[in-house]
Length: 436
Image (cartoon, rainbow, N blue to C red):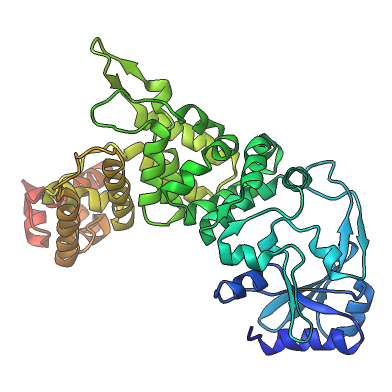
């Protein structure tokens, strides 16, 4: 592994003082997978006060020192150096009751979550890999260090970290690890909501339909609103799948943008409460888009998602049944009202929704490419038309004698006429229309 000079210097400084030092965790895992590490964590036999003294010339953050961590604030990057340690029991399923510093790296690695993360490496000492993490990386396996149930009871956030790792690195979850993840998934509900949102977001950005389906019982514990959709049959000739299977295909098909992925995941949570059957046994879901939007807003508020993400995802869900056609007049109006990015995301969601039905309805359908072609043509011709881009403004209308509400109403009326194609966006034509 080729290391940045600053990282090599840190390892060298610790070793020169007689303290074993290794890279550990994600940077080692990523290096073995051929992925360039984004950051570097070190572990060492040096006690925290010894580490702080060795690097006394470097700015430091000592907020984690009681747990053995000294953070060096190096130019351009921060590096955490943690003393080898073992931990006590986790009575709150999140934090150890006590931490004890130890001299051996193997004892430190034994406390970690998954074998692929329990590998240490030193340029001079080589690999410390007591749990076979390198072999699991080669085999594409995600496996707990030690007893899986114990690992997840210690820290139940590891369940969500596990599905994120599995999706990100395309790993097969070892049988006992998977069984423990599913059986202990209810513990997720006791976690801090922000942490749940963070891990789920990381998972959603990398997940495909298969990932969503294999981890469905875990997702249903993290987002209980999803639980009723698992296996819920739609009784519709337009849908070959149950609600959650359809959701999985839609979510895996939209581009990996967080508002879009969250919208896809939650776009049909309102189907179950809206479900009715007619005399022929056919299922209907009248108003499910609006119900799903309200439920999604509750989910994202509970998970403390950022406001902008929440607003966009809810809007997409609320509008996902809106019929869009490749007609210039209608698309010009929508483009002006919502903007290109919002419309583009709605198109992605609607197209994935159609293809995720599992039927042949989407075959030979060129509606969405045609809509995109019209949008591109409109933007090339005139850009996104808004009140600000009208060829007249409030002062022009005041010069004609308009006052008060007449000005705003007049400008909005002119915008509608331009969007409809009834008037050109030319000052003389617009003023003449207002005079009339």
